[in-house]
Amino acid sequence: MKNPFHVMLIPTLGCPAHCSYCWSSDPGSPRMSIDTVRDVVTWLKEFRNDRATFTFHGGEPLLAGADFYRQALPMISRELSHLKPEFAMQSNLWLLTPEIAAILAEYQVPLGTSIDGPEELNDLQRGEGYFVKTMRGYEIARAHGLRVSFICTFTNYSVRFREEIFNFFLENRFRLKLHPALPSLRDKNPEQWALDPDDYGDLLVFLLDKYLDNLDSIEIMNINDLCRCIFTRRGSVCTFVNCTGNTFAVGPDGSIYPCYRFVGMPEWVMGHVRDAPTMEELSCSGPWQRMHQYEEYVDEACKECKHLRYCRGGCPYNAIVPTGGKIAGVDPHCRAYTRIFNEIGTRLNDEMMGTSFLDGVSSFQREQGARKRPGVMTLMHKVLSP
Image (cartoon, rainbow, N blue to C red; front, side):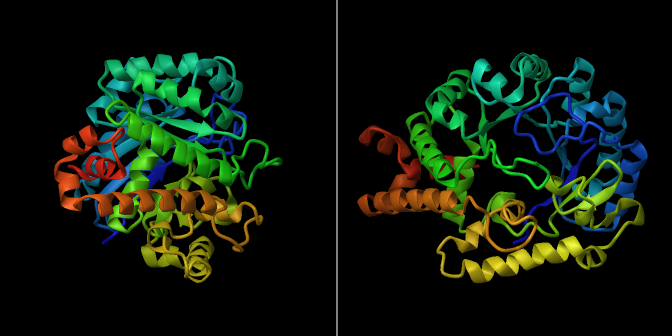
């Protein structure tokens, strides 16, 4: 089974926000021209025939402006129709206007934005005024029927307030995805805000319990993905799959990278869209080879791990940050992943031993009535239902 084909377009690395732990913002970054989008289209016409998702990321992608999206979205939709393109965007929403929202709504572009919890805590980490500006954009998005999900970054500071943060998302019924604050290859003090792997593991188990207590009132996308990994025995998000060759990022100048996290780093450029490189040509690049070396490293280092098949050593970028770019370890959050995979697997096995699996799946309403809280099997049913 092929992994999804994902192209991330980075119109700029610039961003008007000044989040304390951000590693992807560059105030001097150029902006992608519509000619570069045209080069992307030309490159992909003969590159691959699988369905594709195009995500506009940054920096802040809305800095590209309304005219950019007014041209880019129909161009990609029309000229790459054989890829059945779908779109997404990750934005702080500060610059979302009714004009841009209408354009995005026409192409059913779901939005991801970032809020770290209640206003005071959020603005402590992301800067004064961030909360109000993002929520203003959120209201514009809602008014135009756009679906919005929220990423909450947990730092080594904010994790102490996990109860308050969860309650904030629960009370607002926001669709939640959490990120642990990460070190960066581009940060002079990479560990300043980084969340310890053991604390991250504790957080994931805490959120699993909270999710099960409030299953009808909130959606926690990470927990959904982790359950899906356990049940299907394969990775369901980029962190847990071999993403090389299935995910590409295109920087503002048209340079091609293995992932958006490498954009702006010359040593990770695989090629350029104006040259319309083939998959074979990209596979000969240094970055591709380093990503492949990481896969080989994981196969050996993790060969005794029961979660290898659907974890794949975690994110390659996370793995090389502590070593200054060298392949000498897996994702430092390995301990967190192991903790939550074990927790979900153990609970699932215990529930299956206590009742028929088929009865548990088909009669989860009875299960809810028989237990103080729904179990992992109920969550699996929710995650896997069409």
